[in-house]
Structures are given as structure tokens and as C-alpha cells.
Image (spheres, rainbow, N blue to C red):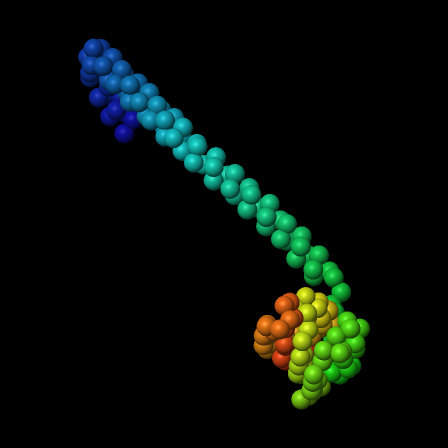
Length: 164
């Protein structure tokens, strides 16, 4: 194969050889210029996407650290005390016992509370406090009282949170 190419090359006149060399050089330079221009056009979008990906990587790192932190935290165990006792104690501690109309416990892990007229902010604090005791709202009905602004009547079912 090399011998055939050498024979074909030497069979050309010097003028033809110089034209072929010049055309090959022009094609090489044209290819190089096209490659450089293509790289220049792609540079700006790539720079933008690299910046976005760096931001996403940083966010992923923060989430991984938070995940590791949460995984290392001791697990909170639910109290073995009946839920009715925990809810009653939290209601007494928050000073809402006077507003309590009814407190029923259909089973040890479920409680139904009914408040006649309680400040909405106090109700929210009570629910937040109960969440720290591993109790969560299963259902809740809140009605604003027209006679007392900021006060509501509440009927709620609380259940013991179970680990998932």
C-alpha cells in the first residue's frame, strides 16, 4: 500500500505535488479553525452549566451532611405511658384545662379532645408540645368563635406516632 502511494506521488509533476500539499494545508487549517470556533461557541453554555452543577453538588453535600447528622442522632423512643395521661399532663401544664370540654381515650394510643373556647395560638403551642411527646394529629376540626376574636373551638383526634 505504501509503495503504491509513493509511486502515485512520484508520478505527479512537481506543480501537482505543490498544489496537493497546499490544498492539504488549507484543509488542515480550515478543520482546525472550525474546531476552535465550535469550542468557543460551546464554552459559554458549558460554563453556565458547570456553575449550576457546582451549586447542585454543594447542595447535595449539605444534604448528605444533614442526613449523616440525623442518622447519628439518637432515636426518640415513644413513651410507654398511655397517651391519655400524656395529653392530660400537657393540657394541665399549658393552662388549657379550664377550656377542656372532653377528653376521651378509645384506646391507649388514641385520644379525642374537645375544647370549648381556646386561644388559637395556645392550641398551636399545645399541638407542638404534643409532637415532642410523639403524639400527632390524626384529624382536627377548628371553628372560629364569633363571640370571642382569636378564640376557637377544637375537636381533635390525637394518636401516638409510630416509627416508619
